[in-house]
Length: 114
Image 1: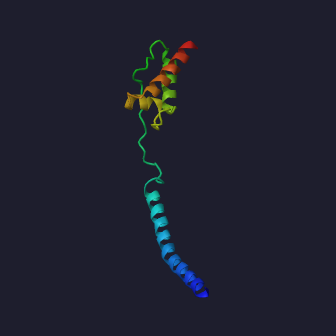
Image 2: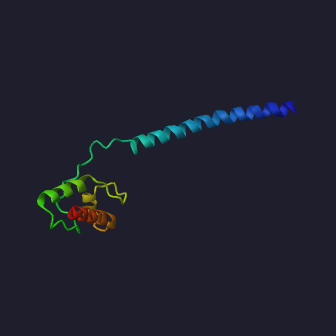
Image 3: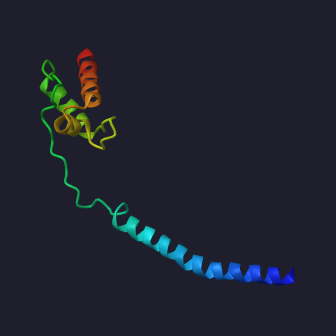
């Protein structure tokens, strides 16, 4: 029984000497992949242009200052469709997004009501 116990500890030690470097290699490669893909800062991202037209959203009937105010809001507010764009950018780049259209139309209607 003592011989089995000694053999078991030696096998576990041998396994640890093999598993530990493999685990360290996997962790190191994972950190390198994350560093060169996900963790990169977006310092050189291109700024979005100022969109003066919002497709399928009628701004007529609003005074020019109110139109400008709404356009500035649309340039800052994020679209709820999870595209990571502003409402103005989503409307101009993804015309099929119905969420951005409805949010923009609702904002125009609220502005007209006030």
